[in-house]
Image 1 (spheres, one colour):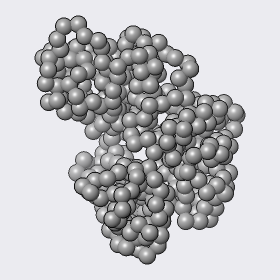
Image 2 (tube, rainbow, N blue to C red; image 1 turned 180 degrees about the vertical axis):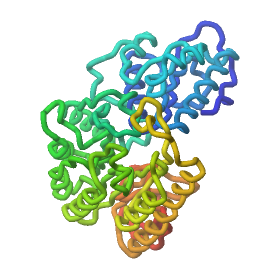
Image 3 (cartoon, rainbow, N blue to C red; image 1 turned 180 degrees about the horizontal axis):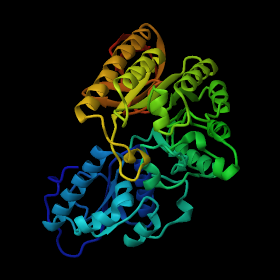
Length: 442
């Protein structure tokens, strides 16, 4: 976040204005939107990532996921602390994952921050900002992204024992949100023009186990699918072990549930999956992928992998490469392993050198680039329903049901007509690259 737009120093006693700065994932973005909604519900002037110079209070919602994210969060805090010391802003508050995980250390290291809050301290943060938590605003949300799509957080926290992951340390145990609350929020979003819901959680397939004593994702999908005005529902962050297959039956039956699944698999070697405590083997993973594709023909599968986990040899990496080659994922992201303290993997020696991790990340992405190119070439000549997301340098850009915003392919739309953002159009693909399609509006 740039600070050069803070041109005026704070003067006198003016009415407070809060600027919320969000780092990290879509789950953090939802938390910031809930905070923004609560502040406005308390008649407090608040904005999200404002480029103006009129906010005197800054709330930084941090990420503490891996080293790069932690560094970005710390750099952002320090920049705003500098702005405070220069008299440009008056108060700096820090919330989110980094603050939850390292609060005691950070308080000592950066004493100029006025207060630190964890991931479940919303009421306390509101009180600090002279606001009360308003129960009647549950299910209401002011969106910070274009209103035609919205992230819907169906649960908080995680009960999985993955050895490399620090998220349970920051987000706590899995807590599902009641179905009635989620349906109400979806209805409110639809009333305000939202057409696409992106379901997110640390582990969406665990949904309902705590509240309803069973995996209840299928029923939730049905209930959300019934909400008038919602044309696309997209499922993110599924866990492979114990996958609820009945959710796929709903996906296959309901036309407004996207044939799309984001299922982070993390590795393609059984030995490394065991070290990662993933509760699944490569063989079971491959059988699951086959079942998913059988139950939902034409489904696009997105996954995430980790390169360089402790103990990963060339043999293990070769297994992961062959796994990717065989699986032909529609979308794939790769992280370089980050050695996170207080995780089980931290008890192992971080024995894969940084440059080798990076080489492996690049090799996986090179392989995926070729797969993506072939899969996209097969779309040339076909017509798709496309959601118009934005206009950039005179060109309209959208997505098919097989693409999530910011992480997946985009469709560059060729047309002489004006398209309304948030509308659906039919478009015929005329050419394709590794990660984008070019299509003529029909």
